[in-house]
Image (cartoon, rainbow, N blue to C red):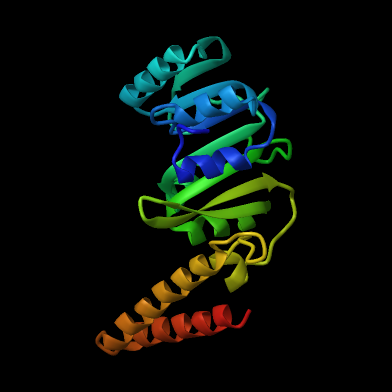
Length: 227
């Protein structure tokens, strides 16, 4: 996986051995190439909504002699992906809201045989909430640092089981302090962001809406600190 940065490397490390991986928003095709070369998957689908990055992915796969094991698809999200034969789906490098929208538009998410590797650049809480509400289970979540910023990668599956959307479940997800050396830093980052929000609300003009938001943010911070 020497061609991958820490973010893509974490996704690759969390990808189970499988038949076919579909990388939605594949950019340059680096992840698909690495997964094929490492033997993590037998076949790779590089998918993107834009033709230019897809052409770059095609050239990369050709340079590495991987065209026979892969294909490039011009598609909007998962709309061009049939569920037959695809057992791992990667959606990375997008906001949590967009990832949730892509999943919402696909008719086949309620399939327990598919593993999802999801990496939100922003709004991870929104994505976790969507997964819990749609009866997905977070099997694992790891932190990674890329370009000086801290992110998490979620491994999720549809199980049909409900997960209570507690503050800890929404804001810390399945990040494990015992297993992840970046977990405590991630926790501190989440708390610091919430504290900045509270400070901003304190300094804002008083009013019913401000007061309600301030009370809610304060309750949330206290709940997250009480683990």
